[in-house]
Image 1 (cartoon, rainbow, N blue to C red):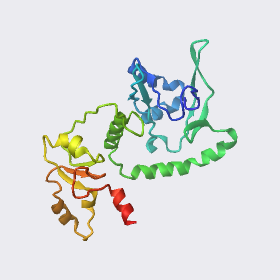
Image 2: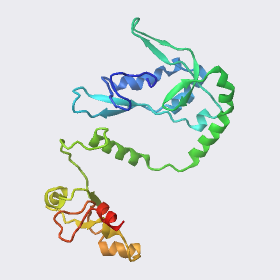
Image 3: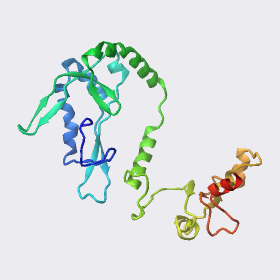
Image 4: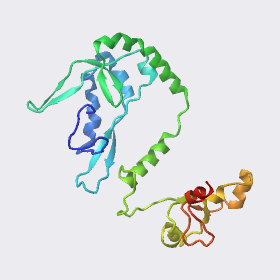
Length: 259
């Protein structure tokens, strides 16, 4: 639960849980009527999405662990002008039984869902109209391609293991049908890195970042023709090339010299 602290882990650390049967979590939605009032079942089911299981990659952990993600999408057609009381289930280890807490209205504060105090109920109910208006306005805005964004996010997570850097002790295999553009930060890549391996099978169009600086106010179409874009893979060395005799230095150094 988001209101309980685990002293064995630090804040923000993704631990995951062991999942023996994924169907058990999917079937758990069938018990939703126990937590809500009778007239709220259909609307709640329409807003609660099927659980997603995201595997946590940790080389130090032998068990297969997952983050179980359950999204709640409050469609205005189902929840406009309505508030829902919920009884949260609580497991009693001594009796090995699940009991339901007292029904309460909940609201989101930061990263936690907390009960609405009785003293705030009037203000909470009065604010529903504004919340409904914001929700309806948001639903009229065309959504971006979230599928592509989620796919990229998952790939980044697999490569970094949830960290801000890639583990250099692991060899990664990238499977793709075609590279359009590669930003390479390895100055030795042309000799001993990914670029040298790529050149064994394909001919890249090698550039530095400075090649894309149109100081002569060249039009976009002319710049595209001069650099040969779209003809073949553009391989851009962002930190210069160690084997280039023309003095291809990292862009940061170039701009520092100018300052």
